[in-house]
Length: 130
Image (cartoon, rainbow, N blue to C red; front, side):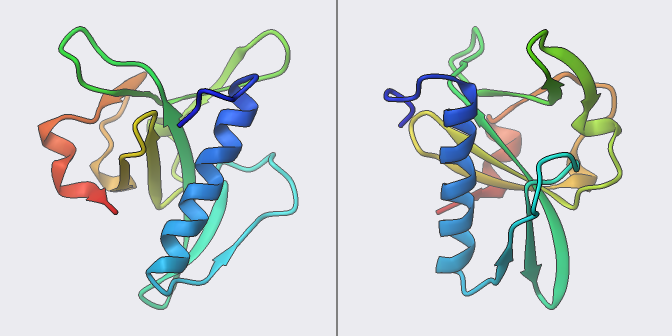
């Protein structure tokens, strides 16, 4: 899915596009913020509530062959860690897209604090979407 991406920004743009397409297929209205300085990438009207969604993509598989998603937000040319998703209280959902095109919509309350990444293995099977 990400083979033609020149950089991680392009990969992230594919993730945002896939998240928008997913929500629209579900009949969910999506709004896109004007800039990218907030903790979330999209706002989705889920069950009548405006929910903030952060989108993450991954190519990385753990030593167990399970995709892992980096929960750190980095910025600038130095790649400095600005925050961790699990420390944020400013999102409602995490939308994850793997290199193979598998999608997950994970409620924020299910993210464990102080982790740099999560595995998209059996624990996340219930959050898999199509």
